[in-house]
Structure formats: C-alpha cells, structure tokens
Length: 303
Image (cartoon, rainbow, N blue to C red):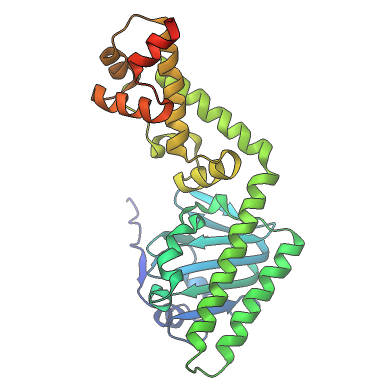
C-alpha cells in the first residue's frame, strides 16, 4: 500500500511552535532565539515538514546532519547561516543531528512599523535555497555569534518602551552583516561563479541560435543552472553590476546585432526568430539598449 505523506505542520506564531516542539517558552511574543546547546527540538518531529509564518535565521557554528529544503539536502558540516522567509517549506531530517549554534525567529509584526519592515525584501538571501547558504570565516562566525548573544541579552532584559526599537535595530545589524558576508562570498568564489555565468551564456546562445521559441525567463535560466532566481541575480549584480534580466537582454541584443549585420531578414522576422511576440517590443528594447532602432543599426553598419 502506498504511504501517505503527512501534511506540513503549520505554525502561525512563535509561542505555538516552541510549545509544540518542546522548546522553552519565548521571552517575547514576536521574537525568540533558540540556543541548541540548551534546547533540543523533539525527535518526534524528525522527517516532518513545516510552514512557519515568520522569519528564521539559523546560525550553525558546527553541525553534523542534514536539513532538507525543497527537493535537496543541505549539509551544514562547515557551519554558516541559512535564512527562511515566512511560508517557505522546510523539513527536518530523520537522521540524528548535533547542533552548535542559534536560531533566531522573528515575526513580521515586530518590524512592520519600522524601516526594516519596508526593506526586508531587499535582503535577497531570504529567497535563496538552503544549498546557497552563507559560509562564514572564523572571524565572521565570531561577529555573528556576538550579534546573536546581544539579541539574547536584550530578550532577557525586562520589556520596556525601548525593547522593540533595540531588538529591531539588532536584527537589522545582523542582516546587514549577512549582506556584507554574502558579497564577500560572491567575490571569493569568483571562479565558481564565472563558470556559472559561462554556463548561462552557453544556454542563452543555444536558445537564441536554435530559435527554441519564446524569450527566456529568469526562472527558466535559474532552473537550468539549478540555483534560485534571487541568488542568481544577486551573484550577477555583485560580479557584473547587472541583474539576470539585464544579462538576458544583453545577450539577446548581441544576437540581434549579429543577425541584423549578416542577414536580409526583416525586422519583424528577426523579432519573431528571437522569441518576441510583437516586433514593437523588440524595437523598444533594442533602442533602449543601443540608442539605435534595429533598422538604424543595420543602416549604420552598412554605411
């Protein structure tokens, strides 16, 4: 008989999750830090999937075990940071794991009336897959650990009129350091990422030259490279200053220039060949990118 996959467990608030998973009661209803050397998640939840309606930042100084995210597993063996936005699915491995580190949970209501609430979507790593986690140097680990310990100290302070302001500023500082360290990771792994860019360019060139139909999307390219769309864009911006969409457009324009300069195809035929539904869209993109219309470029090339 085919086994039935259990439905994900949904937690709408932090207190409910910590109570149900056998962890200590949080000191604040909208934010909590779990230290894994003193609090362990009940093994009854091993292999179960969860949807949580709040943010999660996991800092593993050392780790033995795996966390499943989507269809893959991420091994935290070297330690690092991983991020989860509300309503993303995460599954605990059924394997025995040893944690050394912290997990921060905070609800969107904590930051809603602060600038961080408006800027939270700018932290692209909340859209990364777990296999795109942030790996930290020893120095970076010490900085992150100090930030977590500062949040813990504030949570242990009696709640007063300044508590929320302080907690939000500490979380924002943690996220800003994470942004800095991710940028460092992009730069120190240039060889790996340039290989990824080369694979992307090869894929795009094949799409354009073989007229595979339709314009390539960011999601399509990311799926082909087996990375998340947000990670791909952030990596490209760090190394080239361009988003994935801009990179796709630039490759497309280069292909268009080649066709315009070597063929007698009409502008409309070129547009359709490249995957545009409407020639006007091709004309607009070409002129915005090159300051020439397609016909103007062709004339200047043959002048």
